[in-house]
Image 1 (spheres, one colour):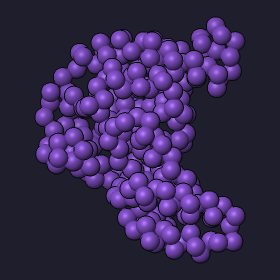
Image 2 (tube, helix red, strand yellow; image 1 turned 180 degrees about the horizontal axis):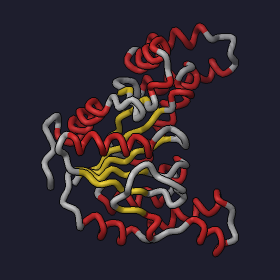
Image 3 (cartoon, one colour; image 1 turned 90 degrees about the horizontal axis):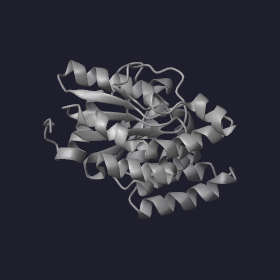
Image 4 (cartoon, one colour; image 1 turned 90 degrees about the vertical axis):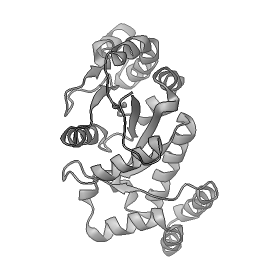
Length: 254
């Protein structure tokens, strides 16, 4: 079983993409299970095969520790690591190709806490990868794009596993905006040129320095545009996961 962690900022479309990707896999005869790792999710667009809310209840944590929602989410993140054996036991009951792992809405709760390292190790870091969802509303400006890619780089550095970048909810961009964002990722010179065009923006100086740092460490490359609403980009996501896990060969259940 290979693990795919869907990671991104709140509102980037993680749960919707998990649902759409699961539907695409089902239609193509590829078995997978969905794991919800967000104890604070009020409603999900899919039926989770394994749900962390079975063991951790956000409201109960708020009541027990007299915490607000944000503080309780931090405690829940640590409780997830403490309950990891329940999760691994539940996963061991499935004979499947992929576990699609929907991470908490607050990116920092998963990517920047020790609990995430414990979870990744327990589930098998060596057979895991990350899908980072870049929010199109942030990426439509050159400085915003730089911010998103910097966040992606930090997440990859923290989680120590292969990552592919996804431009989620691509349907909200018009054709010109979409082409520009995709060109920024594949052609750093185009991004640098657009940063230079915004030299009246005081953030641009910082953006250019961040750009140089990311170019030096090889951040730029491929990005896939996907839309859960319009159901496009799933095949590209699958191809990217095959490349990461198997060098391009189709999955085998193991």
